Image 1 (cartoon, rainbow, N blue to C red):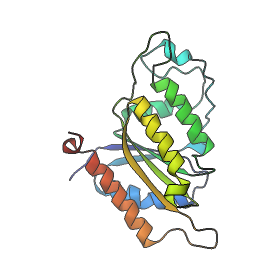
Image 2 (cartoon, rainbow, N blue to C red; image 1 turned 90 degrees about the vertical axis):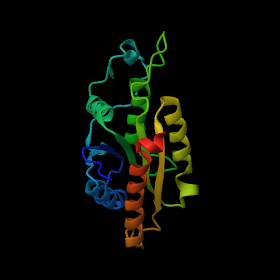
Image 3 (cartoon, helix red, strand yellow; image 1 turned 30 degrees about the vertical axis):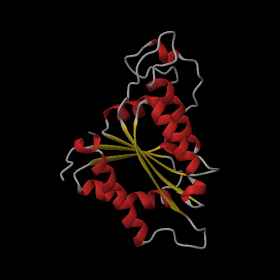
Length: 203
């Protein structure tokens, strides 16, 4: 099926431009592009991203993000609102995502969800499809389970559509990470997400 023009926005939480996560993500992106999607990868370690202050200034105006911190979060906010699918790609360090990814998620929790002011507002990104894409040093059920569990709760609270998670394990520095099987599974996950986001799948 043609998915021409479908905008996929990827928040990349890895600090390594040739690390496991981007190697695994490459066939995924190739598959999406082959189906007509427009994919954009945002490397979070290249951005200026401050932690959330929980000041709730963003709750005073429901028309947009409106964070008091002047950094690159407004750009990320705009791209997320405009995309058709949000993918969170990150290696797992200490059973959770990397620091810039966590900072982004904290800022989005307040800036996107106008729940924390004197009057409860709406979730600006309600219904947005979200998926996880991770690498870690353990089996998925022992290495990425807390990350997925936390994000499932995050998505439910934020009224997002959680589409699932894909994880591959790194066996260590003495092993080559990428192989044809991993590439095939990465491509299959891309096709799975496209199928899940069809109107009949959402019915």
